[in-house]
Image (cartoon, rainbow, N blue to C red):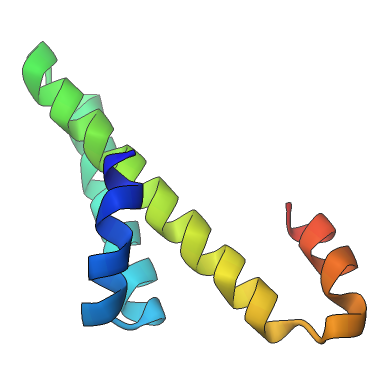
Length: 82
Protein backbone atom coordinates (compact mmCIF):
# COMPACT_ATOMS: atom_id res chain seq x y z
CA UNK A 1 0.00 0.00 0.00
CA UNK A 2 2.93 2.31 0.63
CA UNK A 3 4.12 1.80 -2.93
CA UNK A 4 0.68 2.60 -4.34
CA UNK A 5 0.59 5.82 -2.33
CA UNK A 6 4.07 6.85 -3.52
CA UNK A 7 3.48 6.13 -7.22
CA UNK A 8 1.66 9.33 -8.23
CA UNK A 9 4.52 11.51 -6.97
CA UNK A 10 7.12 9.25 -8.55
CA UNK A 11 5.35 9.36 -11.92
CA UNK A 12 5.41 13.15 -11.98
CA UNK A 13 9.17 13.25 -11.36
CA UNK A 14 10.46 10.22 -13.28
CA UNK A 15 9.65 8.76 -16.70
CA UNK A 16 8.06 5.34 -16.96
CA UNK A 17 11.35 3.82 -18.15
CA UNK A 18 13.23 5.45 -15.29
CA UNK A 19 10.63 4.20 -12.83
CA UNK A 20 10.91 0.62 -14.07
CA UNK A 21 14.72 0.79 -14.07
CA UNK A 22 14.90 2.26 -10.58
CA UNK A 23 12.32 -0.16 -9.22
CA UNK A 24 14.21 -3.08 -10.74
CA UNK A 25 17.42 -1.96 -9.05
CA UNK A 26 15.55 -1.44 -5.76
CA UNK A 27 14.03 -4.92 -6.03
CA UNK A 28 17.43 -6.48 -6.69
CA UNK A 29 19.05 -4.71 -3.73
CA UNK A 30 16.17 -5.51 -1.40
CA UNK A 31 16.26 -9.16 -2.46
CA UNK A 32 19.98 -9.31 -1.73
CA UNK A 33 19.28 -7.76 1.66
CA UNK A 34 16.70 -10.47 2.33
CA UNK A 35 19.32 -13.10 1.56
CA UNK A 36 22.02 -11.64 3.81
CA UNK A 37 20.33 -9.91 6.75
CA UNK A 38 19.39 -11.62 10.00
CA UNK A 39 17.83 -8.72 11.89
CA UNK A 40 14.02 -8.90 11.81
CA UNK A 41 13.59 -5.12 11.71
CA UNK A 42 15.93 -4.78 8.72
CA UNK A 43 14.23 -7.73 7.03
CA UNK A 44 10.90 -5.96 7.45
CA UNK A 45 12.28 -2.83 5.77
CA UNK A 46 13.69 -4.95 2.94
CA UNK A 47 10.30 -6.62 2.46
CA UNK A 48 8.59 -3.24 2.31
CA UNK A 49 11.11 -2.16 -0.33
CA UNK A 50 10.45 -5.28 -2.42
CA UNK A 51 6.72 -4.56 -2.23
CA UNK A 52 7.19 -0.96 -3.32
CA UNK A 53 9.41 -2.04 -6.21
CA UNK A 54 7.04 -4.82 -7.26
CA UNK A 55 3.93 -2.62 -7.37
CA UNK A 56 5.87 0.10 -9.23
CA UNK A 57 7.04 -2.30 -11.92
CA UNK A 58 3.68 -4.02 -12.22
CA UNK A 59 1.68 -0.82 -12.56
CA UNK A 60 4.13 0.76 -15.03
CA UNK A 61 4.08 -2.30 -17.28
CA UNK A 62 0.28 -2.57 -17.06
CA UNK A 63 -0.11 1.06 -18.13
CA UNK A 64 2.40 0.57 -20.95
CA UNK A 65 0.46 -2.46 -22.20
CA UNK A 66 -2.82 -0.53 -22.11
CA UNK A 67 -1.37 2.43 -23.99
CA UNK A 68 0.48 0.33 -26.56
CA UNK A 69 -2.25 -2.06 -27.65
CA UNK A 70 -4.81 -0.93 -30.23
CA UNK A 71 -8.40 -0.71 -28.97
CA UNK A 72 -9.66 -3.65 -31.04
CA UNK A 73 -7.23 -6.12 -29.42
CA UNK A 74 -6.65 -4.47 -26.02
CA UNK A 75 -8.81 -6.88 -23.99
CA UNK A 76 -7.10 -9.96 -25.46
CA UNK A 77 -3.65 -8.46 -25.06
CA UNK A 78 -4.24 -7.53 -21.43
CA UNK A 79 -5.62 -11.00 -20.75
CA UNK A 80 -2.43 -12.49 -22.17
CA UNK A 81 -0.37 -10.01 -20.14
CA UNK A 82 -2.09 -11.01 -16.92
